[in-house]
Image (cartoon, rainbow, N blue to C red; front, side, top):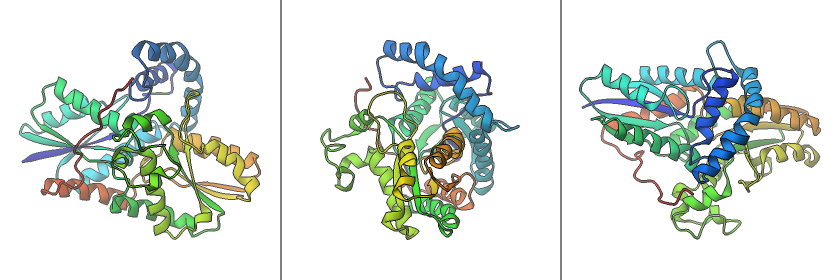
Length: 355
């Protein structure tokens, strides 16, 4: 059977021009799984308020990290594509949820390259399940596959937040940093609104109902971003023998005034020096590729907050990027699937009302 792979990441603007930034923000924020409001309200918020006011600051932030080859996320994603292509038998293409290249571009390239293409394995590069990241990538790819009448079957790798190979790769990427002197390692995850957690709760009675809901077994955990982030943190910290008192956990990138998952990273970075944490390590496991949210938001803004509050050293641990064990993990999942093992195959998505 002729098979191929598509790696799917978040995406970034084509350039740092205001025009391209606005196009990107508009596509991103008009996604009904990112801002889950009725279309008219979403359009008024995004097109009338958020994009016009946010675009200049976003352009400035991207300009601070832009390289000759493009945004860090695009550069690293292309490097990952090339590395994986060398490690497995099927061909590998790259797609983005927002911006270029789209899944259609990736699918068309594969169809043109393989006239007998029968199956494509799409790998959403999101370790944890969230409607605004993993789910929207899967739904978008499925819609494009259906709308364009592709004859190949489309399959998906499921979230890998607790997969031993992902955890091992993450641990080894962190290990050199925790072998040095530090007061705390802060695991900072991309934040999402609390209402997203409630919508994805298939039981409709578990998530966010108790302080320890993430520690109580429930079918809701299959789609619970908060539980999955906590699980990744515990697995990594335990494997690296990080004491409880040196573990931190928070969420970054809040947008709007609605309640988001807490504690907020920016608030914790401001508070920690007064609590005696002067030397901090920060890692962002929700991202597998360094991007605006890691390099600029954490590496620059987060560091400034911490140092102004009295911190002494701030070290941002890079994402997995093209770590050899990360490439090996991806190659292993793909090869296992194409050899008849379905453990990493997505089976279903939760059903709920978007708005």
